[in-house]
Image 1 (cartoon, rainbow, N blue to C red):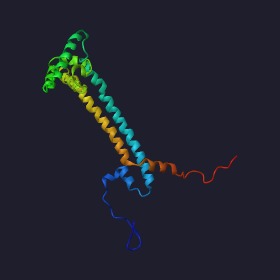
Image 2: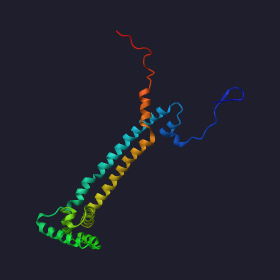
Image 3: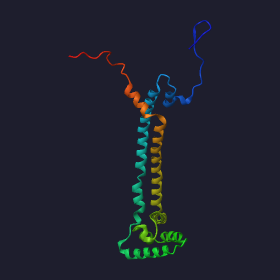
Image 4: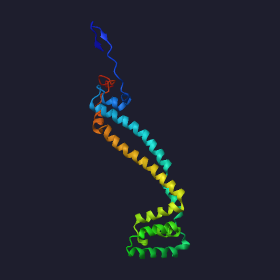
Length: 208
């Protein structure tokens, strides 16, 4: 209120409302009734409420993605057939011989081979990468190349599940950054520890 020309009180001029002022955190930053410690304490409470909601969303996302199940479904075609063990051994032996020649075109050639014959993909997947003259990363790349040809629907399902799961991971990482930005734990805790209960008795209770 402001004083009028006759000594009475007049209403303060209307101010444009800031739509963002409806956010509790923004209102908190301008709350003159609270100390810095108290503001941090309330910001911590707000963060805990936000965390609870986001954690539920992350849980829903991860349950929906079920990455492990999707991966198992996609790779189900790659376990080797025991009856073809000798053939797989020959394929891996051939691969090691070719790898020893240091042919720059070999990776592309092998990729074409695993996409043309599921048996080649199974042979490479049946053991550690070095048995086929490749590293484990390239071994996985060849396996996914084969899956895109021989199990495209399962592969697409796995890729989608992985992408959805990553969104949950990003949200979780974002919470950590938000916590650092919203409040300082030491100040919030100091406000909690030093608070005085105004409803407490003014004098200690008399001993019986």
